[in-house]
Image 1: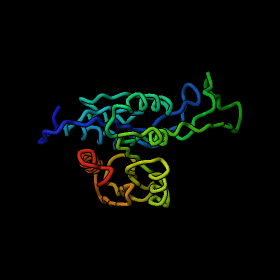
Image 2: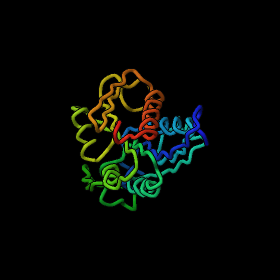
Image 3: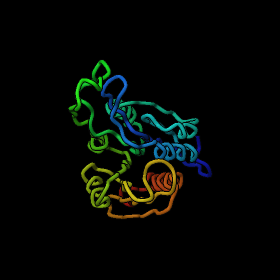
Image 4: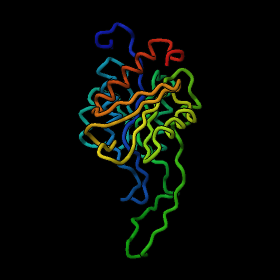
Length: 231
């Protein structure tokens, strides 16, 4: 498939979206407020521009489903499933955009039966850390352009820059929980994009489809040129 208005060969984008969920018992789980909208918008934009797209997504909001049309979409539940699918396709990707909100922790064990509320007034839930998929990709990176997301409640720029360096990313999208423009769901967002060379770009009052367009165009420019020199 050729890119719209461009005769260059398409690139392969590996994109993640949505939350992961970690089971506590057969009916309960740990998760977060991610709807998957950002990752799905990025995937849809990459496909619209003629690229090969592999989307690995957790349980996304129903409103995101139309964006999956025509995509190779792989649904997963937990962080370990997402890691397995991402690593399976990582080697053939030109650009990886990790927009999923992967659960940092999972219960040590999932109970076989439903926990009954009348048995105790309190419940102690023991958790263990999930694999850090983004850090592992950074360690394994060879030719890929690797883009991550950083979501914080404070000091978002300094923490995003630390993530950029610590996980060997080429670009990170920083946003903040709180305030009028929540990063979750639809509506206008404020983000800051940091590059490994120190460049920073702020995008204000933008919809997720606009942010997706900027990220894909930036990735194209970096991949088409000598991006290691020009990023």
